Image (cartoon, rainbow, N blue to C red):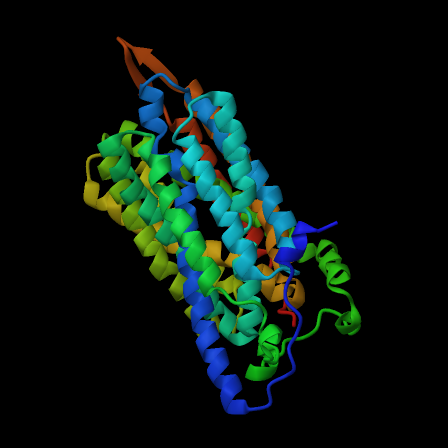
Length: 449
């Protein structure tokens, strides 16, 4: 009987190329293709997961769904995404990434097209949950690809570049998708990204690369002469599956997971409810609110790139000192966003820019870079998947808790809906502070090979 999973399996190694000039040329060309593909591809993937953030107010105002129901739908995505990240991370270590990543994105795009054609609480919760599972292909695939093609001492810089993907995707969503919804209604918020990502999935398949060995190239650590310290002396002879299980025995990975969970609660609170907050608490239109969050994501691009460069060049690939500095900036920015007097758009926008810059650097570190630093490189996908479970369980719980808190603070007076965001704000800021404390506790953890 034919096994369909064979299609996704990584290819066999080809005979090793001995011509150094050819090896250098192939590595340079393929590394460039990989970085462009995973950065833009993963960034565009975000447009098929964030539409729900943009369509909330139109759907609520039309009486189609309540904030609490939208919170349940959003949490369905994050629960399945969390476990999708875990299982897909373990599978990605064995996969041909060009096939694996592009297939996941194609299915996600088709689900968005279906969401734009159907309305109903139950069917939306089911479809959005399935979308979460297939969105879970992207991040592990990108990180596995990066581990195959980039070595330890340069990974921070390239991970920083790749981490700009979420800012690219969020910016496209908060500006582009918001414009689509303003012009053609909430359905366009799903259909536009769905059609776009069908094309992106095809492009990913054409641009991504399998492991270096499948092209006759040596491991990138040999090519760069860049080897870290092994986690254990006997791991070289371990199977990939056995090495993946080592991750579960690393206390630092569990602490990192908790730090990532609490960071993600704040991150996705802003992503999921930020536009509604700016519309209702600050009085901005949908396009204005989307534009402010769009600027926030542009700043995130600079924040990711700066984080990778600073941690690699100034701290010799040590992440915790830079994470602490970024975390303090992020908490300060949140305090300004939520507690500064209303009416000053310049101060609010500046605070969102600082928040986007700092949050993106923290996301780069806690969301994956530090995990693949301290885990064996052969199992980067599993490390990313393990962290992803914590990350998106935190996001899912946030979605439900925020929905309940916002619903509880909502009153309808003379037919007009009024919101009280005091309780959600305390929850959102508090999770960032907890994340900062947990991340700082990892100050002395070492990098592995």
